[in-house]
Length: 353
Image 1 (cartoon, rainbow, N blue to C red):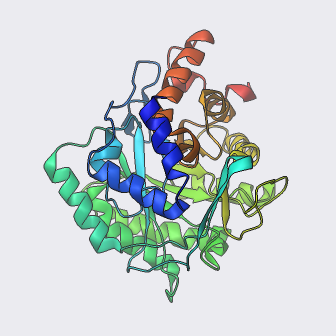
Image 2 (image 1 turned 180 degrees about the horizontal axis):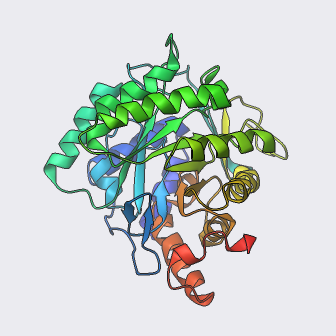
């Protein structure tokens, strides 16, 4: 990590988390950060549901909620980026303060509540970004639902209808803990309804794109079995595991009891357990994207060995800066080579073998 990045991180931590986050997005939007491009090699290149990624290290949803910094993020070293969550209509989200750093735990609690500028605004920005120059990595869209919606299951399809022509994949977010009742859509019957609507909307797009679903870590094995069966029977293209957790065991930080979703280091173990369970339940037949607590090459490699075909991170950037992305990719290259793998796909699920 360069001295300028260390100084910038220290300065960011002197301001409140939401302001620091907005400043980081603005800096990327204005091109005020280095643009190293994605680290890549034959070992790191991967194909997930037809998406060609130069490396498996993606940006999770929640960082660029409104598609403000897409070109900058695409040049920051990630193998893919996911923007959003995006709701059909604009909504302010929950009252501030709504983001809390857990310094002692290297975690973050947020209760943003899907604050969104709405699908039309996001679609316009995505179209503009693509019109300026080709985007070098896949850009995904996290589909959300409005808090006051009378039928949330149709909201996901509406966002895809509006924004779908401008993205490479979409993720159905039924796992945010910050919109009351949203996680109820993870049940078998409700999830079938949501997926059906989204797949119908995809059929009307100019080109078909992969559809994933993002699930919570706070699920029993029986619940995960239902998710695995629905994913396979409905022909979903993949599962993102996992979103934030509502669990609070073992936290030592001042803000550890704030309500909201906990991310970062404290969720690593549980999210990786869920990932491994899904890999076993699906017999490795559906791509899994591992998210939750990735903060270095070691934790990234553990997700891959547990069953992840690709990865996403976000919270660790708070503590380790944007250069973390290329450091993880470089570290994965070395670990794959040391274990004798010619490509990352060979290592996926190796902990089960």
